Image (cartoon, rainbow, N blue to C red; front, side, top):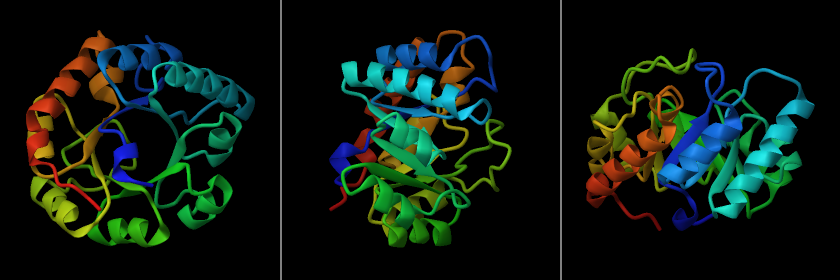
Length: 218
């Protein structure tokens, strides 16, 4: 999987942190705001319900040529014909996911340390979601804050697109991009805002203002 197929603005949809917007509504608004990647993040509900929602989200993404990724659940990714899956350190093993999804689907891996990032690389991930870079309340299992210097070290060491996550907002996105991150992934910075479309647009512009500091990967 080449870097060019990994998006720069990943919006994770969530209905536990907020209940004003559904996954579908968040998808529509994030796409309208400039998101190039939508990630379905849902921890509750039946598998059938998740397949139904994910399939509808995939359809919306297809219409706008936006990448659709499922968080954690490789079965939902397969059933909804998602473009890929994002897996945490304790989720479905990346090498087995690759066997099931093939070489043409995107597989992202989560990392909170250099060791975990190296494992994502050796396991065959297409990109690494690294963080939390800043303090965050969106994930209960988020580890210690890494900070911008560690992010920069990860970027310089790991020859994969690095997607920064954790406490990312419009204000600190330029700093993250200038540290060399390929892109950002956010949850509350869009889902918990009064206007998700406008929040996404702000992040899109922030990426543009800071992307000159990015690093190209082979």
